[in-house]
Length: 300
Ligand SMILES: Nc1ncnc2c1ncn2[C@@H]1O[C@H](COP(=O)(O)OP(=O)(O)OP(=O)(O)O)[C@@H](O)[C@H]1O
Image (cartoon, rainbow, N blue to C red; front, side, top):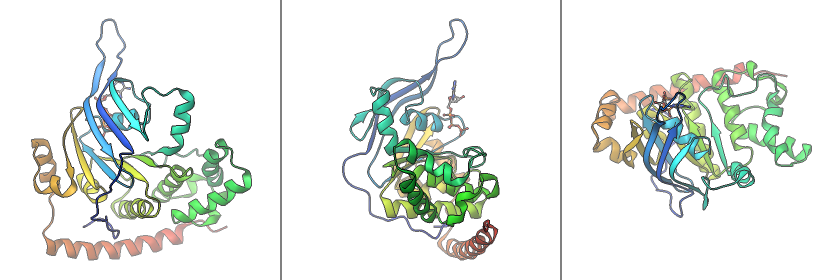
């Protein structure tokens, strides 16, 4: 393991699927006379169990974001089913979607644009709690818990997003996604905008939160190294199709599809000695990063 200090458990999650996507097609309508819709996804089949991370890797334009959006009910599905906690979201009405929305959250790539710049952190985190009818006192208590869970001090409550670094903002975005204790979080390139050492810290946080809460992740990234580190299983997307699925180890040791083989060539697994040395270097870097983050946090 090269990226983080956290360890992914070797035990595979068991039980009923929390999410099952079957034979899914997504077609975007295109403007213009007689233009056929653009098929962005073809015959997608994936599933995720409670407490499991499915990593979704693929090149730009392969359809990763579209699949995440389809699961969130935000993409034009032309065929197939998306069953979340036993409910087919393609058939759900607005009221059912709202209640499903509680258990299904998202963390986006860009921590600079995903937070409302004019709201204080306390209000950003309390917003979903208020919508669900929590009293201001209960919401305030939950906001403090959330900040603690993502490793930010409680005085962050009265600060604005611009007062935080990229890594700290992504922690705030993760806290917001966790507010309603979701069962599944769609993580759409959540570390791509961060530098390498901050990526490692945030990946550790995702692992720790999963250990503590049992939440499942669909973890989207173009970076195979990130995906195979954080995921129990990996699905490889290519031109709108899933061309290969397996455990991170299977995909790494015995890639079947030429695209996966190319991805691996671009991201080789280092030999054990080099790996250990890089891990030590990484740990030292992480410690420096943590100290720096702590010292740049605003003090009230
Ligand atoms: N709203 C839309 N209307 C038409 N085509 C779209 C729309 N959104 C995405 N597409 C097309 O669907 C395909 C898949 O896009 P998508 O954003 O899902 O890929 P991606 O793998 O997430 O790429 P990236 O890593 O660059 O974000 C692309 O060809 C894209 O141009």
